[in-house]
Image 1 (spheres, helix red, strand yellow):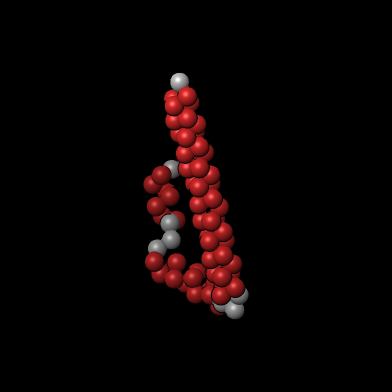
Image 2 (cartoon, rainbow, N blue to C red; image 1 turned 90 degrees about the vertical axis):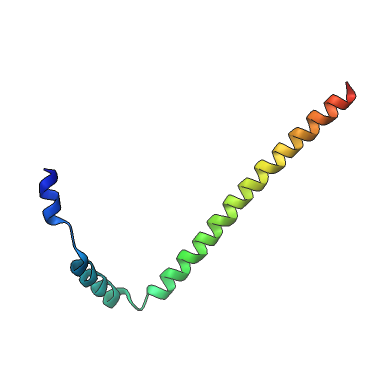
Length: 73
C-alpha cells in the first residue's frame, strides 16, 4: 500500500499549476486574507504573552509569600 502512495504524490510542476489556479481564483481576496491571518497571529502572540505574564506574576507572589512566612518565623 505504501508503494502505491508514491505514485500519486504531486510533484513540483503539479503544485505550481495548482498554485497558479488558486492565485487566479482567489487573487483579489488574497491581501485581505493575509491581513486577517496576520492580525490573528498578533492576537495569539498577545494572548500567549499575557498567560506567561500571569504565570510569572503568580510565581513571584508565591515566592514573596514564602519569604514573608520565613521572616515571621
